[in-house]
Length: 366
Image 1 (tube, rainbow, N blue to C red):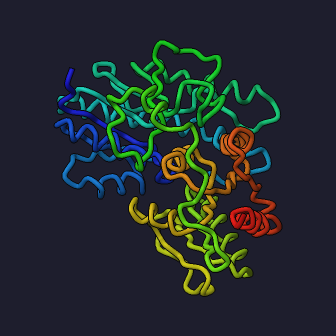
Image 2 (cartoon, rainbow, N blue to C red; image 1 turned 180 degrees about the vertical axis):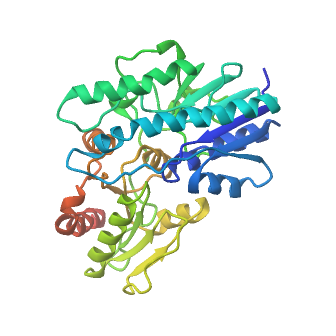
C-alpha cells in the first residue's frame, strides 16, 4: 500500500524527538506522500519552520516539571501522571477530529501516546520498551514500564530505532523479555544525520554496511595548537540551563577553547563570556557536522537521540548523564562498558572534566 497522506508527530522533550523525525518526513515526501505534521511547544514550532509548506496541527502541550528532587527525576515525573494522562486524552481528541476532516492513511507517533486512531494504521516510535529509572527498587521500573506498555495496545506497530541483535545502542531499554513482540520492528538508529530512506532499507543491510560503533577517531587531528572542545547541550529545562552554566564556569577558568551549542531557540542570556568560549544558540545539521569536524572532543548528554546522532557522526565524546535521569545514567554506563566511552557525573564535572579532556588529547598525540 502506498500511503498518500501521512501524519507524523513528535514528543516535545527538548528538540531530540523532533529532529530525529526529519528523515522520516523527508523520506515520505520523496515518495510523493502528503505529510501532516503535528506537535507542541518549541519542538513543534521548529518542525513547522522546517516544513512551512506542510499542514501543521498544534497539539495540546503540558509543562512537565523536570526539576530533580531527592527521589530522582522519574519520581518527579510520576507525580505528574494524572496531568500526563489528561494530556494524552486531549491530544487523542484532536487527532480524532483531524481524522474526521482529513483522509489520513498512516499515523507515525514518536513517543506521543495519544497520537493514534483505531481506524488508521498507527505506529509508535520508541526505544522505551523497558524503563530504567535508576531507582534502587525494581518495583518502580516495573510500574513505569507497565504504565507505558498499556498504551502500546493502541498502536498497530512499534518501531524501535535500534538494532535487534546483541550489538546495539540501547541495551536493556529495547531488548530482553517483553510483551507485544508481534508488533515490534527494529528499524535501526534514527537520526537527522542519516538522510537516506530508512523505511525500505533492511536493518541487516545497514548493519553489514557499517560497523556497530563509528570510528572513534576525530577527523580533526589533535596538536598542541588545536585542542578545541565542543559541547552539545540538549534536553528539557531546567537541567539544560544548569548544565550550560556549569560548563561556562569550568571553561572560564581553563585555557581550552570551547564551542558551546546551547541547543535551544530561546535568547542567549550570556552577555559576556571569556574569549576562549564561543556561544552558539542553535546549530543546524550542516553546522553541527562542521563543528564536530573542527573540534577534537564533544561533550554531550547521554540522551538516546544524542547517542543515535553520534552513531552517524562519529568522533571522540564524553558523556555527562542528566542527574537523576535513570535512563541517561543507564545508557552512559552501557556505552562506557560496551564501547569504552568516558563518562563523568555532573557532580564531578569541576574536578574531572578538564583532566579527562587533557587525557584524551594526550592519548591522541601518540
